[in-house]
Image (cartoon, rainbow, N blue to C red; front, top):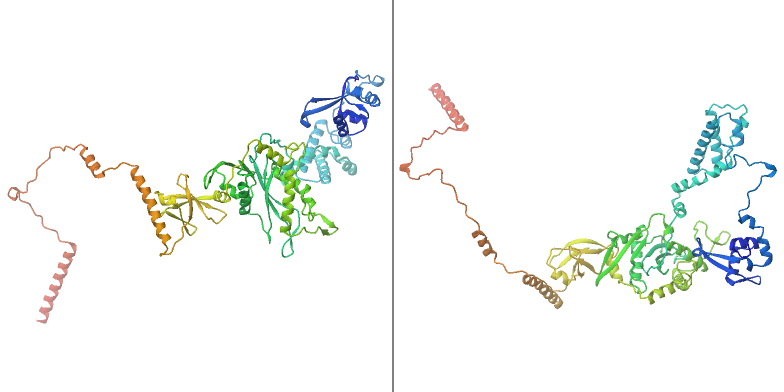
Length: 594
């Protein structure tokens, strides 16, 4: 190595006996131990965007230059070595000389092929045991028994069973070489651990817009709180993370008794975010598959839905459901852990994330609770505000900027939110049901709903967006093609003497009459009877054939007819026979009596 050459940082750190980080800091300063360092930056591969630092050997202290001299033979290709005493190297160097173990190889009288076959069967047995979740010690014992039985099955009968059992002991190298088969057991029984360790692609927020992708999730807060009855509870955090800026919109919820977050809770937090001018409606929503996110199915129609708004069209929003056991793909999961460990851990009552091994103030005594839920809410949002203003690390996606600073850059560049009111979001989380329009109104949930658009509606049926999780105050009404008609409100009956009833009836009649008149003006006037008569006149007449004969009605010209006697019915014959039988019996009686 010449004095004009450059030395990498890891080699320099090893020679100087210090850490690579200390050498890197010296390169940043430009001097070390009173010597000005000549540093060169080259582009390569690896971390720190592929930057590699090289230090000129001539700029180092003299003692370090001398210390680097013996390393020269290790980094340079030297001459071909001459074997000591003229001996040549082993011909089988690098080849495996032991099949299973030295004792077993020397004890059994099998040929090389048989030994190799037994060794392969033994390796498969070890792999299967590890894939089934067997412990290290169990694998060695069970594999030893398998080797002994397999050896005996090949006809070997040991003279000394004790020596044979010892020879069948499994070397630790055979087990260690197959340890990676434990991942099969992990895949079968611990899918979460497998998903956390499997290969993943990297994601970058370069070029992303605010609210382009929002990730939502629910997280239990690791701080003990007290209820009104004195019992201990923890709050639930419903959060939505703007991936592009790192900002978080969230809210807290606590239960007086045991309970869980439902769709209505998530909808309210989501609606509040969409209504805020700094957040607005996300372009894509990335959420879990839990039942508390069932509302998103009503926002998603083939992954893309144009959400109909109360006062005009909405914006396209795509709903993406996370894969099961895929927490690592959601940045909000990392944010939960970071916010817990860096911010919430500074508050009293923090119990850490392991609920089975909670933090204790003293042996056998858990930490004292923070206070009530009402006391905790201001402290939580105070820490959240600090997070939004805290600069991140330079290696993070925000490149050392805070979430608020990153968002400010997008605002200066012209970004603005598209908001929707909370009522519009609640209406969007609805299912479409078909209803019949009767006298300008519809029936839903036992109530009558109406609006001016229904007064003018001339079709028979409409589609009503019925909120799934809320009691509606208004209903979005669509025609049968999905086009927006209007907003229906409850049709409240009025007193017969209330003048507003007459005014409402007159307004409805006028609106419906105007709609009919408008329809009449849009079509031509047609005389249907005249059209039918003209249609009949235009049809060609059918000319019949000549008659095959002629029938006359003059009796004098009519030939005599033969009238056939009518055959008596069966009932008449029976009656006549019965009468004759009775008459004969009467004559017989008269003769006898005399």
